[in-house]
Length: 432
Image (cartoon, rainbow, N blue to C red; front, top):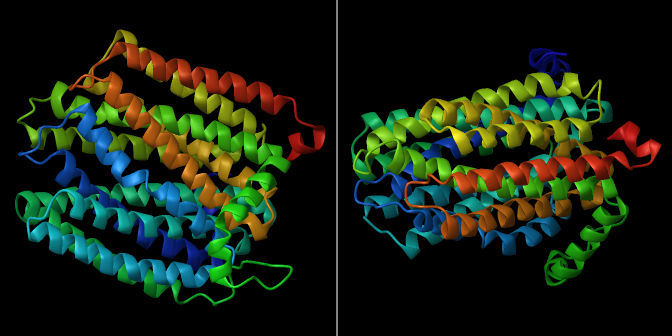
């Protein structure tokens, strides 16, 4: 079935449509906000960007969330998830407005990083809540289609939002003033997403509990025990555990590749002083990646009707390995843009499968914790990639050794996951 056909199939559910529109509106704002941050942190004329600077920025933004994530999971399995979507967007609107005020005031360094971190931490509540809520608005046999449509559309809209943010940045001013204005527009869109989420019934999205949840304060105090329970639940459902391990490995190599591309366009393909040229080139990369994501949305549901989801994940990792290997021998802007398309398709194709495997394998009472753990795995892997990049990449990002490591890593992930997933029982093979 085509992407349009998948969308038509799941959009017949009124509650899916409401959750879907809430996601798209919020993620459009995410893209706009992150575009402004990229301009502010990586492509400001006064900044000399190096591998260590880019890595430090990513680590500062992502590593602390590894502490927030477990609490998010516990709360998502106790609070009404519809309320989480409403409140999270209201909080983000307020916090993003605060970030804009800091930008207008010329504040930089730790205060600005702390404010951005708070915004992104709330964003993780929202995204984890969306994933945990999806099985409540479609039928079980529609989860692959729903994940394909939802996550892919969200990614495309986020990239489109980043493109709009880039264009606004070009026309509303110069420097940090333009960034601040784009951030204010993002804050207004978050308010719209909160209003859309409020249209859903309060109890629609769960969680479904066999017994009444303990007091939230008590639950937060026992967050470590709750995460251990969630880890045991994943361990007892091996398809989910293996899929999370594979996507974590992918995220590590994807993270190294992302930092490499930023440096290439900042200092290798363009003069370090030509920040506009670098930012424009990076915009082309994100557009190509978005096209790859869209292709993954079109082909993944159709392919996984014919082969196992685990097999398609293995193919995706192998495609990424082949593309990264090309850079060991040849490197130019056109090839990097093509690579963004291929790796974007591979990344989204594998993510659709992982999301579905986890949703199919995990009991609803654990989904919030498991999807928050999923986000923690994502962030730790990316931070680890940032550390690796800081230690190995030159200032211009051009290292054929690192490209070789990325390619070999993707190939090893494909080989190991392919072998492990092929050893499952016949019942799990039919599901995954």
